[in-house]
Length: 474
Image: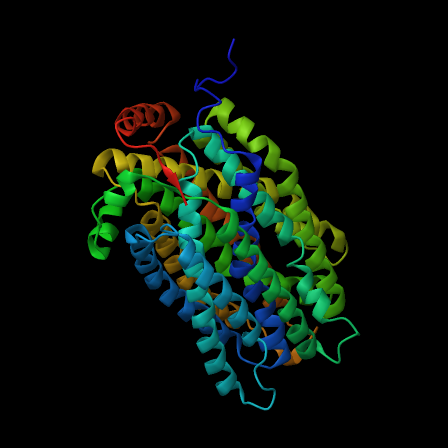
């Protein structure tokens, strides 16, 4: 008896390990692009340079707001591109190089400048950095969505991407610890040297999919009608499964990022009483614990999704993340600092399953769109998805700096923050994300694109594709 309740020929549209890995290495570049600035910004620009956390919230939000607007344009350009190198790789190459260079430049602001000049410099360099990151990420994500038409193989492709993302993610929480080491004169010198290493990592990780990933570039794609930006953008919002999936992810990430910055301050000032070196070590351990638990769970996500369905496993993953983030109230304790790793261990499997399965479902949504419109528009869907998420994150980041200010935090007090300030930090950090995750859970169980429906769409598309010519590979 076949254990898969959604029977499909397993050898159909399989992706070799080499092809999965070539695409997946780009996940390391994506992870660094998305999280490295956030990891270092407050320790360097607030605690190091004295720039207000409210200004830093704005400095993070404005580039992401522009990035959200820039993404659909990149998606349209990539989907409509017709080059000898395909629709994706020329954009990925330029984006990877510019991301690496601009990331390094962010941390080389002159020490002699005032906080206003530093704020302006940070915004300018961040605009370049996040625009370049989008130039890489949108076509790279679209490339992954088109690697296979096998519904369950898509989950395995995205799990491979997440493996590389999580693997490099082990190092990111330790960057704060690294810049605090005594081998550097201070954290400013430390971040400047560390940024060079991170820039090289971005360059190499983005180059691998550019060189080795192959886009399926059929005659039907070459000759399909080009879709204008506004029309393509608006059409995406008529796709009901896409809207529900986007709202779900938007809700989770906004809830997390609204108070994510507070985690650093709770660790430093509540758990360790103002000791930044001990706190930096714990930040490293909690980040590593999160990624270790996520990596341990990755191999079974594809099996569970095939056995029980993507939607069901996604709902279970959100509930697990809910338990993890709610436990922070009890686990971030000065009496038992090492319990800080417990929420990270619980959240790892939940959030990594979310990233894998939403990416896999987005590929199914692109099939549904092709079924409705006759066009393959992976880059536009990746971009619009990113646009919605980044718009929400922009609002969360703008508010996050003011949330910190609203708690009464004063960096001049060091470890002598008031009990009311610490209580407010802990409460927001522990209970805002669970509320957002509960809303996302309700949206997930209402997601309409089941495996059965996706297979019906696959059958119809397969019949149509048999009438096209054999694909060229670029």
